[in-house]
Length: 330
Image (cartoon, rainbow, N blue to C red):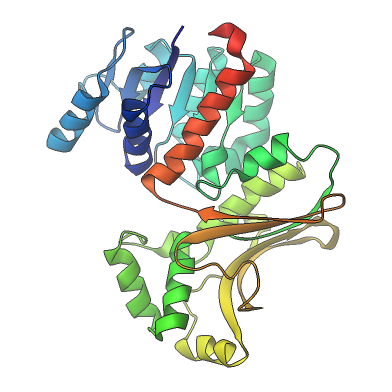
């Protein structure tokens, strides 16, 4: 029996998910889809190539009379995939969609950082009460399966600290400033031209995106209930070429590092000088994470932290994980 999925959001991540579902025979059918202006529902399955063609040519994924709310409430699905844009202040409307899907007794997979950073414990409790899964691998570090590792693969280990390069935009800018001597503005403009940075990069370069990811990681590992306001955040927007040059003269470089050390009450994101040979000196738009554990020692993970297919791979991984765990229901 095919697994039924409804998709909310057809931006870069959503289109990546659609591309994977269209190109791979995964035993998954799309029964509902919506963007901010349109939607469609088909219990027999939506033809994804036709959907992508319509989206490219009209900007709509379906009928303007069918809203995302209607898809969430009415489409027949086993898993709601919520990949709409993040609202870091309210987490809406995504949080509402997730609540409604869980209330229906459906699993949820999301790449949306807002609901997980703001309402993780409430949503997790709701999922547990309904006997369904809430998975969010794609909210942190793109294709790196860090959430899976923390939730499923470190049994018996106490995670004592976490350090990470969690924003590909900042890492690309810092890499180019160090390697080519570019100014911050030149590196940012280059990042924009390559699609690594948004037209308004504030969310990334001031450290907000990395801080939200730290909140998600802290609440996943330590169940601390910390909020964005609890993270001390310094971005890279005021970093000078001189600072980069001085670091390079010390055989070091600068990276935007997120740190969590609960025993010392450290929750921060800031540019740090680290040796060029340090594991976190990854280049370009890569992400990297170090977990410090009591039994396994230091564990290092690195990979692409952004990108349509890279993030889609984390979403698809969560879908497959749910199917394997709840296989008796499909």
